[in-house]
Image (cartoon, rainbow, N blue to C red; front, side, top):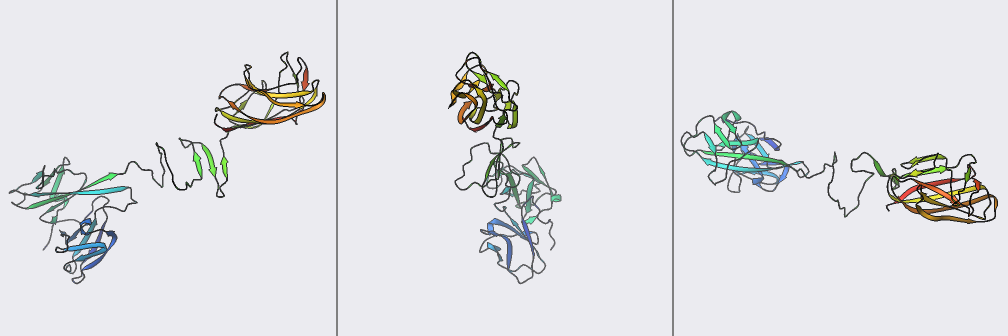
Length: 356
């Protein structure tokens, strides 16, 4: 007997085909199932009933029929769901209607009171026969209309497969953004850390675990030549750091010797200064804003004798504000004198070490 119908092809629902031999009752499934209710089985396009006293049972990867399908019968198994590592999950709702004489339109509450609703993936069965899409039309997401009227007491079954996307996820392959806090109780394996817009790399970790901070603001300054610096009546002069060796983020004016940092935080100052001559027996240098506001009153004190080639070395960590003009000053305890700074032997390095 011929049946009207088509091979199952419902969205991303996985299906598997077998052919009856007339003797085989057991078939191996391509994926494991919990029970016969987890699959839809058709033989010759006729839907089969699951159960130990019905047409078939299924457990794990084994499908067992109560009677062997006839030789050449098309056996189609549709799995209701997908593997857990897939981006979509599926649910199915079944609606059953008992037809009145010559009824064509089926909508609203079914025999159990469920209100018919469906998306784009729908199977329709009439008395267990899978109908071809030419045998019915769908409209409004809630109405199935048969091309020909049903006979009284015919059973119409609508299987609506509803797919949904798991939207609150981040793809392992293509990545994405977390807007909330992320807690990792185990190890966090990462090679690169970027800013929130993913445009700037802040940190890289190589295969040996070495950490490279590629965005730390820093600057290396030096004195070139042998410039003379006048000490004012306030006993303070400006160190003529007139050459930028290297920098990232920190700007420096080689004429006024003022510098700015790009972000507020704690900055390390480390340097060495050598004066060609001085009339005082001590020298010191400090950091101040260009308006005279002090950051650190006395940074380094060097005691010694007056005369040529007096050196000062030292380091300190100081809080600095962003976009503020700073400079490095010095004094020798005397007013209105002139001191020359040795080029090539006087330097200063500044870099960010942490938040303020």
